[in-house]
Image: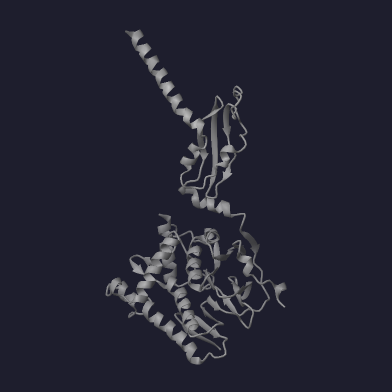
Length: 161
Length: 251
């Protein structure tokens, strides 16, 4: 009786393994399918996938001829995707991609921060300096009424929520 | 012809360079600002806004001008991630949007009357049209630490320029959740936009965002910004320099 149960479990595990292996195979045929769908509407760059293999590959046996990938786990470089950064890890087995993982990807929570870090290098910073040129009109702040301050503070409190 | 009046709690200057301008033309502009004040002021008991806030007038029953402002306020709130809001504690304070809108409408009045070269300056928010005797209008950005100085000179044609800030009366915008921690990182934010209405509303909203405001402007097509922080350093958008008149460019 025990032997039958153990056998059944072993067979079950083997069937499960075959099933999972079959599932993994289609991913290998269309390497970019997984990241493209995962990134949805954001401007996630696909170049990361084809980018230089990462710093810590764990090479296995060299893949057979005709295959373009070497076995191992590869971590892509951090790529700027405008709304954030993307970093991808791929696992190659038998010369085929068996797993694609996002180590980092943009999300709504950190979006504003990412806008900052992206825009930072573009903007110019300087010490203000008095100008001698004669002007026709002067622009300066006057909107300091209590109502203005209250309205702004209220908007700020909502933006914090 | 150049005239100045104190209206809506601020100095309003109108200058028309076209030779056929008369006192009556400028008076029409000031009359328009007075009518705007009568309709929208929170300080006038009989204004429509005061009546709405006391519950005596339904928004649906208000004038077209009020309906327009309420709609523009809501549109701006949506376009600025909620940083611009004319309503608080159930009360409406449309002053943040009325000013720029009124200057823009007043400029339209002059254009429809056939004037080409003029400006309207209401408390430092400016709409310019045409040129000043062939050269672009020169607009100084006031030093928030010293009212007698300008820290930048802009060459502007047919655009709006508006500045939001805390400098003049030393007041600070604060975060109600952390009232003990005033938002002190920026003191002045000047925006160049397609017209003064656009420049004013986005200057107000971007200022409320604090240091992040200049990045918000950077993402906004058709707008440039110049932000001055408490350490007297300025950060400006990538296209801002096109409008800057440096001392050595002056003949």
